[in-house]
Amino acid sequence: MAGNGRKTGRKTDDSLALALASGASIAKAAQTADVSERTVHRRLTEPTFCERVAQLRSRMISQAVGKLSAGGRSAVAVLKNLAQNAESEAVRQSSARTILEFMLRGNETLDLTKRLEELEQAILKQDHGHRGHQARLYGRASGK
Image 1: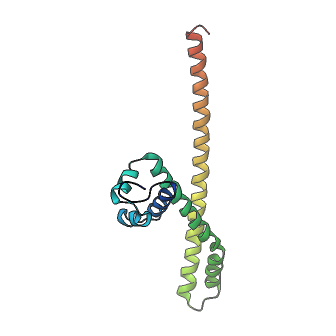
Image 2 (image 1 turned 45 degrees about the vertical axis):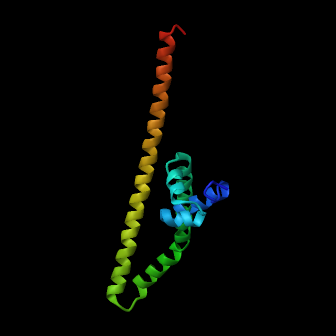
Image 3 (image 1 turned 135 degrees about the horizontal axis):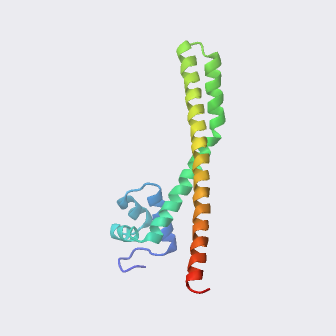
C-alpha cells in the first residue's frame, strides 16, 4: 500500500490505463483505479505509461472497427435492396447515391494507401542506399 492508503502496482496500473484509454476523466480514472488524481497526473507524465494507454486505446479502436466491418456486408445488402426495391423514388435515389459515394471513397482510399506504401518503400530503399554510400565514403576516408 502507498502512504496514502491506496493501492499501487501492476493491477492498479492496468486498471488506470484501461480507464484512461476508454476515455474516462482524470477523476473517474482515479476512482476506478483507486488512486489519487495526483497519481493519475504523475503517471501521465511517464512516457512508458502513456504508450501503454495509447496501445490499449488503439486495440480498442481496432476491435470496434472489426465489429463495424462485420456488419458491413449486411449494410451493403440493405442499401442494394433499397436501391433496387424501395417504393419511394427518393429512397432508391438516396441508397444508390450512398453506394456510389462509398464505392468511390473506398477506391480512393485504397489507391492512396497503395501510393503511400510505394513512397515509403522508395524512401526506405533510398535511405539504405544513402547509408551504404556514407559507409563506403567514411570507410575510405578513415583508410579502411
